[in-house]
Image 1: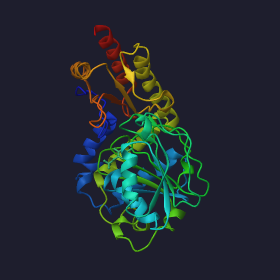
Image 2: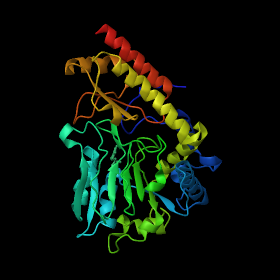
Image 3: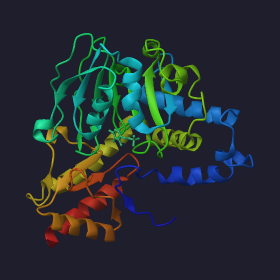
Image 4: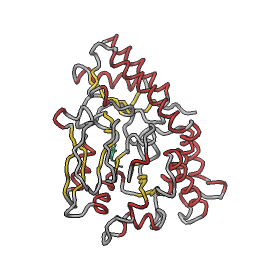
Amino acid sequence: MPDRVINFNPGPATLPFDVIKESAVGAVNFNNLGMSIMEMSHRSKEFEGLMHDAMNDMLGLMGLSSDEYAVLFLGGGASMQFCMLPYNFLGQDQTADYVNTGVWARSAIKEAKLFGKVNIAATSEATGFDRVPTEFSLTPGAAYVHVTSNNTIFGTRMVKFPETGAVPLVCDMSSDFLSRRIDFGRFGMIYAGAQKNIGPAGVTAVIIRKSWVEKAKDGIPTMLSYKTHLGKDSLFNTPPVFPIYIVGLVMKWVKAKGGLEAIEKNNNEKAGLVYQAIDSSGGFYRGTVQPESRSIMNLTFRLATEELEQKFLDEAKKNQLIGLKGHRDVGGCRASMYNALPLEGAAKLAEFMDAFHKAN
Ligand SMILES: *Cc1c(COP(=O)(O)O)cnc(C)c1O
């Protein structure tokens, strides 16, 4: 096994090493068919089979039925969903409710405003996005309500999702998809760029209630219509074949780990170790968010000065702990600890943090 660094990159991010190794085999000679998975038709029975397995495994992990929900594998990243969602579901005279919890939520809001009216149902902007609101002022009869389950840049997560009644609840789960148990059946649509928790960049998973797709607007460009992709089972055009293959392998890996209950337990343990290192440092490390909103995927913290932060990052790197620099918009440090980061990785970081604290 090659030396692998302990990878805290925010995305693209660490993947299970077993998946990397298996995909390296498939990249050369898939199922002994004498060709790479990348060289096969997306309409071959082998590819269709693995794509359907990936879809079904994903729904299975979420406890959703394929009678009610469909998985679409689309290109364009999570960012494409910022415009696709309102394009399909927000009429000019309609209002959509958006909860503004940071940079990605704001990007989603900007796109929605191109199509209809936006009501900000709650925001934590006034306190620098250091928490996720728990009270929401919803519009009766809104087209949908949009939330972000985990705020990758600010290091917060939503625990209490809005009660939306008959109004579809939509969630950008890009940075904590399949990292914890959530009542997924509450959502009209969930989307996630693969490159944080479920695969490489290039594919976005959209899990959508089929009965809602029927209500989508007509007369919009073919490629941007959910109806197109649902109608053709994600094979309207050539989908991102190789990323979908890896997502399928990651789904099997999550299942083998014991599903979301086991994954969540592991993630809680990992986050606990690092938050403990922060909280027991007597202010040497300062968490940047309110404890009740702390993310277990992206853990953000600061040191006393930017110079000390740089020293921390440099020495961490010498210890094979990489990717700990905070997002350029907010600075500081951030440990992104997605599903595939092993518990030992989090333990090494916590140990390093204690040692660095003592030495400085
Ligand atoms: C990374 C991220 C995005 C953007 O994803 P792309 O696939 O790069 O478009 C959107 N939302 C959240 C919450 C993210 O973490």
